[in-house]
Length: 409
Ligand code: SF4
Ligand code: SF4
Image (cartoon, rainbow, N blue to C red; front, side):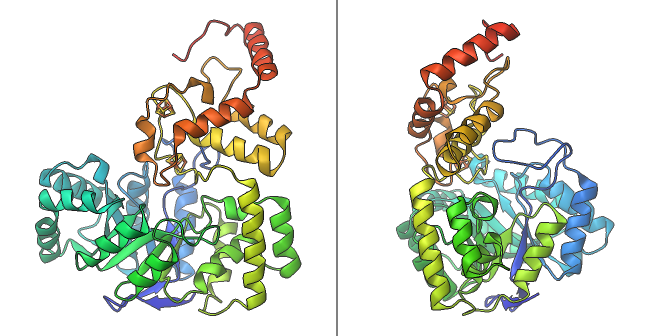
């Protein structure tokens, strides 16, 4: 394992961090659009987390908002007595915070779930603009942080970010942050904080990278043409390894978070991380990325990462599943896209989850870290994935199955 120094604290952080958002679940892996948040497979999760520790991973990133994640991390680390060997990062759910009491309430709950008396790296979850930060200040977040640090409950304070570069630069200049977490991958180096934000932040603080594989798309969801480009350049590296190397090539990235949910993925990422030194890519490699980027731009129409933050929709739309199937219809063909759409939105069942259920209320859009115009995109999905012949077929199937008059209830 390679380590990079956190320039604020002097901590040596493993270049590969464990993203704890998508642990293995009973009955199958967590996938885009999955609404089953209840049953984490704790045995498999323990195997994964402890193997990661064994392999030298020392940074574990969870959040109050990740279903059952803090509890699982806390249980596993307490049971295996490794709390002092690892750095735990977790996050304050800003969407639920309206005053200082809320900061206390959620933080205490996180400590409790994680079975610990302190958090190494504590983040304000999902800042998106400077006004939001100003509002938190008005609610006393700065003195609250100072107090928690004095009590030794927070070691280092940072924020995760999903907004424009301009707002990011204002936020990092306005407070003595000790780290930050941004979305960054080769598919678009200027998205959100992007490369400019990364370089600017890295001058004074460690930068943790999230979504290096764009919710798995850059690992297993690439169009065949893009996979071939990577294979032709280096048949021994997987698309995921290429994507991680692109980031590790840059000295400014301290830790890359990867949400690994099989031992195979973990071992592959660890192997890649063992050689993760800045400057590892050649000019020829960078040309390959440029070509892959061109393929991606021409195939993926909706840049949804499958994070599920917009869910649940009160009208039953499975938003990430709709977008995933729509993208598949361009990347891998209409037939596969339709197949995916039919199964993941359960269009022939009593309770369906398709795009046509959207009432355009807009509630989901305020939660999307990618700032996607969800309503507009669902309209595109509806037009492409629910043509007249499809609706006719579905109506016939529903009558046959006895769901003709069933509504989502
Ligand atoms: S805009 Fe559509 S998808 Fe979003 S919450 Fe409202 S009904 Fe659901
Ligand atoms: S919040 Fe945005 S990126 Fe995340 S699943 Fe929903 S639409 Fe996709």
